[in-house]
Length: 362
Image 1 (tube, one colour):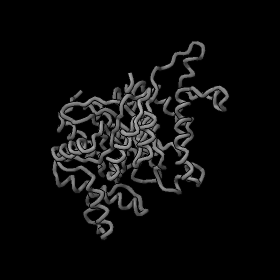
Image 2: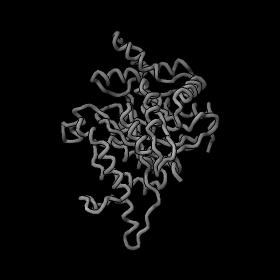
Image 3: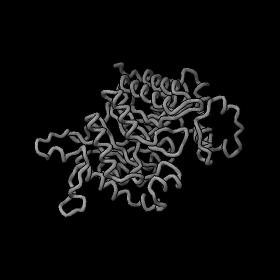
């Protein structure tokens, strides 16, 4: 059936299916090992409480973000979960050869059959110099422009259906469909569904034209959310994948037992963003460090603008904010990213949100 593995199931009183986006954030005084262990804990909680999927983002050269290798992290999470969908939110395709991504996600699909998503973006997920190092080229705009061609090539590798005469006709992504056509071969019927990610209109339109599911980065491009979703829906053409549009949005949300603690944690995350945007990326600071920091006028304006799109407070306040956002955007799914200094705070936030909506307990 079209949409299998894409459309989520709504639980409790949630307005739409709820999911998790993980940046594997590393707080000051913590290690990447600590952050990855937190990811396993959150994934376990998400699975037990009915969150639909758990995605990991690709970022590079950021000390406070340990998600430079989504496929490796997803393999780790697959070993510690049984049912929840796992995926990339996303793999930045211009940074990689399409064959490599087809092989990586074919391997993940073999590890966790029927529960792997392949979300793709065309941004570098880092600064220009790092992107140039990743791609071994300084022609970054050229890589973004070639995204539709890279996407088509990746799709061909995943389906193993390059036409006769194509230079890649005899090249096969393994694990993959070629194993089913080999003597004695048996191949899984599953193939990771492709999602397009975006923060503007380009991927929205492309996802619509191709009939693919679309994920929009509301958490850092809120002003473009409604226009991009409208463009996606207007451009949508039914496909073998979907017969109707399906769009999720990433939303920054943090619930705590105390409203003041939520403000403290959100200010620490905002200070981290200030440093990133001014070329000083580092570990996520503690709330105490953020309280002692003297923001200049420009930084205060940035923080006010940034935090205006972070839903935070008690569980009831966050539930109200998520309900309003779902209604305002018409999103089919909300993917929550909870940024805070401590892993315990992030874990508690997802639990409080689950409780606020009465999500089931496994």
